[in-house]
Image (cartoon, rainbow, N blue to C red; front, side, top):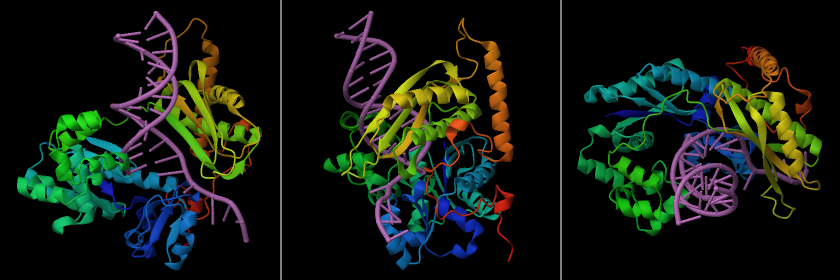
Length: 424
DNA sequence: TCATGATTTGTCC
DNA sequence: CTAACGGGACAAATCATGA
């Protein structure tokens, strides 16, 4: 049983550097949507002590002083480079689980244990040569250990050069290593659980690995119990098949500016529902209900706060943009209150099932359904070919006063001819 | 009282 | 110039409800 976890280094920053090599060695960071928080940092930025998740407006001055280069996030670019990285990695194993935009697991069962280090190096070199993104590789018996091995590879522990294979460590070396790493670095141990463990004097990974299982189960949860098992080499989290359809779809966004009126809110909800319905159809699913929510800015404690949410049941499960928008706007009218400054809204599609598997009812209008399928297929095809949002429904509005801030975005180098820079 | 469904919580990246 | 703090997904835990 051997598993590899391959994780791109500072992924978003690395994507920006692929197309601007002069950023190499310079402090670079990438901001979240709306230019809100720091979500990716180069090593130089980490060395300056800037923290992950820190709001940009608090750092802007400091960043200028240090000559930090900040980008708005460019998901079109990151998605495209991610696809290339994942596609290359898929050739290294018959089984791959894409865990997130910048990391995946590979099943290395049956490979020669002595050659795994070299195999990991081959992955790194191939990706660097073909895409230009640096990655690290962690190899171990379970997912949790592979994540940890990757962490060690990134930190460069014990002369490790981008690949770390726990299979090469004996018991004593393993214990010593684990005793040197804080428990919060384990996959699945977040802030809250870290605090709880600390209160029980469980400080290092070695402490956690040797902790009493029953006690962990009763004081925390079955999930943490499994994590402890995994740290001991007992596999509890299996490799998941790719292409499994999602169980929920969320589209939500903070606004670039506060909005107050029902009209602007309706536009945003219609727009988000359109995006959600596209994802739904891409998955080949239909939704049974849609939830709508709006809220004010929770960070402005001195102004009146309001959170509204509701769930609207559809007559029958659907993937039709217009039907979904109709339901969403109905929900919005119920929860809308005038007199508040709204900062964010969103929709959530629930009760997802494979299209076609839904129970047909006596009153289904099959002719109307067939027309809807054609309409939606055409809409998706045009938008795919001509660019997202070329054809939209009137309800989504045109001007989008509420659109998010993206003041420092790089061009879509790989997906839009018109955004290729001039050759100097 | 139990089983089920709905909502909240915690985590990850 | 001012004001300015992400988004999406999942599973388990917890709460609410109704037979």
